[in-house]
Amino acid sequence: MKTSFQRNLLLWGVAVAVCVMAAGRMEASLRNDLLMYWSMDSVEDGLVRDTVGTNHLKAHNITITNLVPGKFGNAISLDGGSQFLSLQKQSSRDLPIYARQEFTIAMWVRGEPRQNNRMLFAEGSSHNKLPLFLLGTHREGTSGQLNVFVRETGEILNNLPTEGIVFNNRWTHIAWVNLGNSAKVFVNGEQNTEYRYERPNLALDYLSIGALYRDPPAYFFKGEIDEVMIWERMLKPKEIKEVMRDGFASGASVAE
Image (cartoon, rainbow, N blue to C red):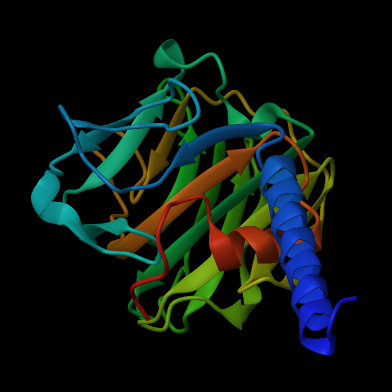
């Protein structure tokens, strides 16, 4: 006959097993349709590796000296003057991201609040400067809000800031969740802003992180970027919170 202590110990073991199984299921679901994942933990041979595929980012003026403690493992620190990451369509059959009706872009960022018009994430064209999909800092640098810009030949979303603050010298998690003509921005796991717009068909052939990859490159971001992930589906709010809390990297959060 089991004692009260034994029964409690058994119940505790069952509860732990259930939690572990639930966490495993959640991580497995997060890996569904995960298209690209750059942990930013290392720079090797001039590349930042995609850990779920072959969409490796070219590192421009970035070496292992740019690796700093991140939210999970390492992050990449950018100087705001010459350093960024890029991927071109000729090297990736998965570009452009914006061509999909459903997609999610998520990352951790840390940067100063008064940077004017600096790029976190950009998709553009090497043949035409007009079509753009941009996520960056406030255009005028007057606040720490995230700025959204979509353009075909005319502006569709013209430098629209989010409601919440993203750039405040602290680690902040952001997610852009797109479904057709509607997009939602999540800041630190909470829905912050929603956009509804006539979504254009943009002819885009490159992706860049930390700058706009033009000739010459421009709008360099100064700060740290970590755990950049792209899914070819909408993440649910609970999934965004899960990936924000746990990520996919081994080890715990090491920076505030």
